[in-house]
Length: 185
Image (cartoon, rainbow, N blue to C red; front, side, top):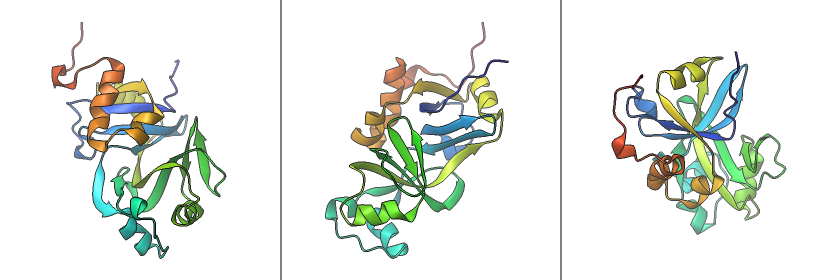
């Protein structure tokens, strides 16, 4: 059986997505292999600012521009852990390079951001989305997700509320035309 590797792709939740955690979400797949998949939801800011998060982890943050940025709901798994998507990839203690984007889970990136020498662009999320082996493929087959190669600009340069539709447009699909029903010819 040939399986497609969806690392560096977006998962676009279909209207039929029954899991409320993923309704109208855009998820960046950071890792997809025989052990399963890991992704970060990139279009669901939560009611927490970076200033509040940095205060909680006891890192002083004086950068007013960074302080007001929202923290994102990255997914329901390990919601008490922070995950930073960023570019450039950089050399942090715990970074998984995903194409031109890094996924970092170590505190040193937050300290660098607070000190003004972090990555140029970043998205800080709490939690991640995880799939067991074969689970993501099964959800795609059941029309839970559309997939499209990820465009990093969409994560870092488009407002969160516009990312879902922008990914749909990259795929050439108008979200308003999607129905709840799966079509099989």
